[in-house]
Length: 247
Length: 365
Image (tube, rainbow over all chains, first blue to last red; front, top):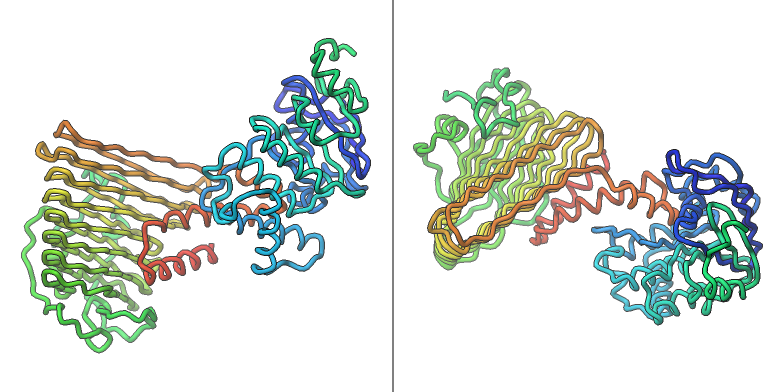
């Protein structure tokens, strides 16, 4: 379970999060929607531990651990996975080597046996097939020369292999065509389990046609201003965000 | 002895030889037999600047060394000519492909000493050679080799150098390559050793359609100084030159890349390109880059690019967010940069040799 309590965060002098309160129970998928500049990406970065954000107040508890005390790699081992809005290119780093290093680093921290090259490749190939990706994906350098859709698929591949307890999708749907959108949705839906939860950060409702959320939250001006069932997303799509900030 | 160049000379602005000139170098001492690379290749071995016949392979195309007069005004080449009494002299006959040959220099001695090898390599029309040069050693010494290369019509030389000298040593190498029509010179230098080193290449593209690739990787740490200087003279039409120099600098190491491309009036359709990329691993590291283009023809393609920077923190965070510990993430990114630096080397023995040298550098890092 993820509990965010009165979270305040800033970049330099600029306060972006102004008291976010949010609870995501195990097994649930929550969507966070909101206008540009509301703090959606900041929230995802603060949760995953990116440098440059100063938390001035509040706490984030995940499965009883205070996430804010952990290094990014330890958050990953604890089960947090951030699917990036703009996945980073790593020239010279092969995708298979990257995935295996990440998987084994996490397995080591969790006290599990590391996978050898053969066992890893078997696992990775199966994941590649289930995401309808070409097998040469594993041989290419991480995200180098990938199309927008391929980069997002690569994020889903990483998520499938690392088996997180909490996936945060930061506008993963931006710039995707309908086929790629379905692959992202399938990637998340495939992980649905009593111990898996997800935060889907999105500007538009269309991804939520494919990943049906249990709860929709509206983030505006650095706070959750409204929460409701999945129908809230449709309402927002129709009426826009105007007027919500005062609510 | 001809005087050493000083920083007053534009070509020596970034490399100060005073640490060298303050040392009294004697003649090389007799050498013991060192551990040598185990590559199963025909080889010529020089110990403290003298050919060790018993460690070398009999090569039909190797000739006896003869002294030569130095015509250039280059100070280091003049000093070399004054002092040189040995070196490899290889004449590959026209049309012959002799495969790969190792050229090893090993130096060691208790007192500072200097040696000045002079290598001459001539490839007849259409001849082929891959030369892998390894320079290693221990102690304080000054290795001042000059390599003169002549490639006749359509000849192809692949020249791969691993400079892994003693950390107290000085290595100042001058390489001059002259290419006739359709000849190609593929050069790669990996600079890992020496306290202070410079590789200075003068490549002359003298015949239609000749090609020169002058690539380098410099891996320097502590207070090491490494300089890669090249002058490519395009003197005939439709020649191409390509250069990629990648440097990784740790601690207070300093790297230099000076690259000049000269395009003669007659050298139309010249295609010249150079790129220098440096990764600085500490705030005390320094990289100096000086590209120069001198173009007197009007129909040419010539460009250069340079980047100097630290590791990309977005890349580091991406790896960490996937569970990879910070130190390991940084090491992966540096390895990736180094591996990309080795891309121009395709000869399998050379690749293995350089990968091992880089790995060793990295482990000690």
